[in-house]
Length: 113
Length: 115
Image (cartoon, rainbow over all chains, first blue to last red; front, side):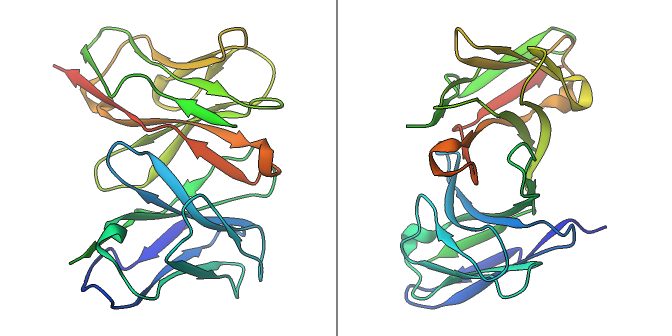
């Protein structure tokens, strides 16, 4: 049982380049989330999805896009990377009841030069 | 506005001593509270949660947390710290202002247990 899997684990981009981060979960969870983690700021929600085909903006959505074409996958895209997007990105998923905890992937460390 | 505060950036304890990591919250509606732990180069792992019922909640790895409604606190505790408990700890709350879909995290507290 893999849980939540993120690819890639590391990536270095130049300013203006684009990339897609992939998140896959095998727990049949309805909800999926993308967070970014920066020192001293905890985790900030970028986008989330409450079901296949649905997405919504979180706290810091600018510069990112997402898609959830299949229930098990949640993609995060950076169309034109900026140094301010240097961060560690975490995907998480959960069941649809609000007392369920989040299950996290191991993160993607992105550096934009 | 929903929020979570962890007033200490770092907590230092000696192995074998009790530890407390503090968390206070501000929510509208019933507080659904969580603690997570993060080890280096890993994602967050769920430790325990308070939804309703007993104010003392027990979780993984010997951790427990005490919910105090009057003080709006949810402090994480362990009677006897281990060096292996050294990690980053996050308090979190469900955000009811947006239907409960989202979780808000505190900034994190780094726990350092010295042998």
